[in-house]
Amino acid sequence: MTNQPAQAVPELPVDMIIFGGGGDLAARKLLPALYMAHLHGNLPPETRIIAVGRKNWSIDDYRAFMEEQSRPFIDAKAFDEQAWGRYLDLFQYVIIDVNDPGDYERLAQTSRKHALRVFYLSTSPELFMTICDNLAAAHLLDKHSRVVLEKPLGHDLASAKEINASVGRHFAESQIYRIDHYLGKETVQNLMVLRFGNPIFGPLWQAPYIRSVQITVAETVGVGSRAGFYDHTGALRDMVQNHLLQLLCFVAMEPPVSLNPDAVRDEKLKVLRSLRPMSVADIARDTVRGQYAAGAVDGQPVKGYLEEDNVPAGSKAETFVALRAHINNWRWANVPFFLRTGKRMQKRQSEIVIEFADLPFSIFPSGPRNYGNRLVIQLQPEESIQLQMLAKEPGSGMNMLPVSLNLDLQQAIPERRAEAYERLLVDVIRGRLTHFMRRDELEAAWGWVEPILDGWKELNDRPRIYTAGTFGPAASSALLAREGMSWAEEA
Ligand code: BG6
Image (tube, rainbow, N blue to C red; front, side):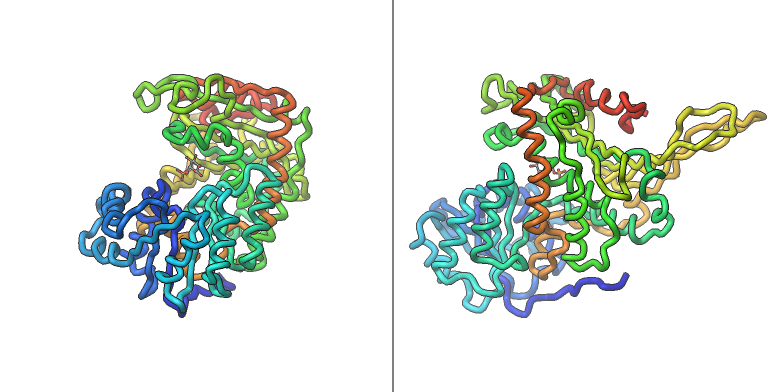
């Protein structure tokens, strides 16, 4: 492929500074990801990692925290005692109350003067502005600095704009890395190769050859210990505004002129801006909110959402969303995009289903009616591609049976797949912005989602209850059935 962005190894030594270093995301995702990057030689020499937290810890306390809270999240097969020991040596711990400007002096003393400083803000977004202001006041920012912003990036369009404006006062857009970890998944990046590396799909990838697109991100986990966050967030903000819309962009975008960050992000932005705004009537007809009730997942009984810890009585938060979106442009006119995500569903499965148009006319006497070929791109848990087709049933007639061409990508290419956070952290260090959201993309996504939130409020929409361990409320199936379609697992 041409126009590959440069894979620059920074010339300056890197100080990776993690705000929220003692937090849950650091323990579960960031520290294991950096360990893997270290193990595979993807951290530049002389990298140092400075964890910043409020807790009154020594570096030994911090290392003990890593042993207890982070090590269990490293794949046991990839664990190497010596590499882990060397990894622990890269760390420093600095105690900071982020609201106290004086505390940043400690960070200024710890971070090297001529380092490329990467600030990873894994804190509540309300603190981003204060942290950036205080970093600037402590003279910790320069033209090399980079900042990584963890989601949620706002609660609505206004708050997203506010975050962007406050961070933008201190960092140029080219220094800002807004994380959507789905963009770091190999399988998601592979969508670009599937679409733009395989000419076979080019002519077919549009209306009228495609009848519908389904994008499902189903999880089996419940809300766990995150109700405090989740209950005022809900599935639309938590998953659709970012992950599902990003997947939709990869399916729907025009070929970018190159793989340069702005070329790719320009095309995604065009898709987001072409999403047809939903009126209140559209919202009532084309969206389904759900909430799980007690049931069983993987054979184990599980609680309903309302019985989970810290969920307020009578909460109306949605743990499931299905909706029908439209893209107002030439390529996709009248092709429905069905998006669906939920917690406590029957199985963990993220997939994109491209349903091709029916035959204009069938010369065969029998066989499944209205059969469209389907391309099923499975992203999680396994990475596979299936092309569903019809073949002749052996025998004297000309009966047809559905069969499928299956490509197991893990088997075809057995190489190690780095976890999303590992890929993205290495991208930040190397200055590769392609798989991070640009300011205008984030705002366009909020611009489309916010009216849905407002519409639900106006309609006083209560979530429909679904039993944990199913694929969501019946209304979700009805959304497709009314157009003579069905979700992939129901076909
Ligand atoms: C996060 C959401 O962004 O993505 C979580 O906040 C969700 O609620 C998670 O569980 C899903 O990510 P993955 O990589 O497990 O599909």
